[in-house]
Length: 121
Image (cartoon, rainbow, N blue to C red; front, side, top):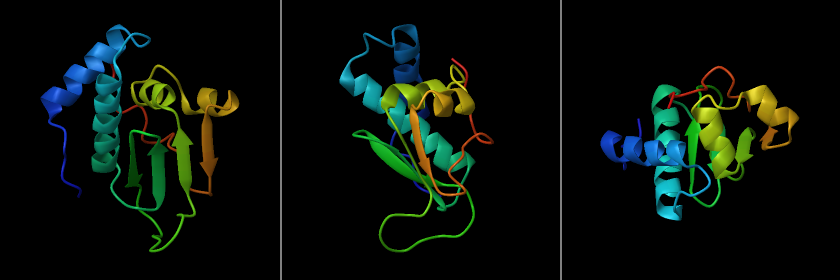
């Protein structure tokens, strides 16, 4: 299991500030909230068969299954910070995000339906 870099208190505080005002949150708070929930995902769904990317703020690997050792992993999910936070907090469902074109998911295991949402705010 990866070591957490963001404490639960700091992460929850950033997430609460984002939830209160998603359009007006500063970049540092946004980055902290995104990274906190990426760490939460890695902890709740350990493994490295899927890579979740939220540029430019962070990346993590999750879900048990076949692993890769070099190059781009076969299962990649990429999305913007707002979409990630909305998915991770239950404000948006995986199917809604996918149907709206807000998620890029490649590979047969690149579906986070079973592990989201992570928290409710």
